Length: 73
Image (cartoon, rainbow, N blue to C red; front, side, top):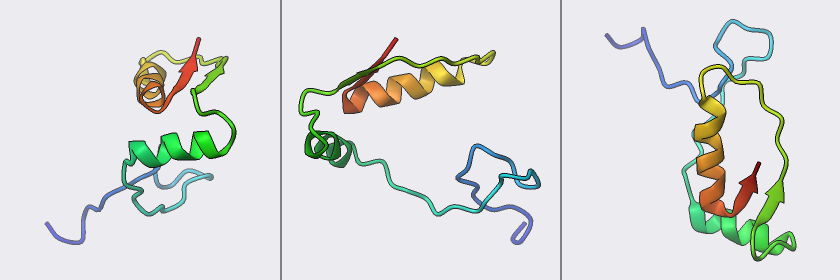
């Protein structure tokens, strides 16, 4: 049904105050690693994250960050 649905690339649903339409950013793991290296973290980065997530969305996000070398506890 054209015109009734469209891709939404934001974690904030449309209609909320902070909602903004965003363009899709392609997943580029090598670019992420290069950016970390350019920032002075060639071996990755250890971070502490405080997340209060009841749906385990943060765990999936952490797994994606680990692929680029950002390790959290």
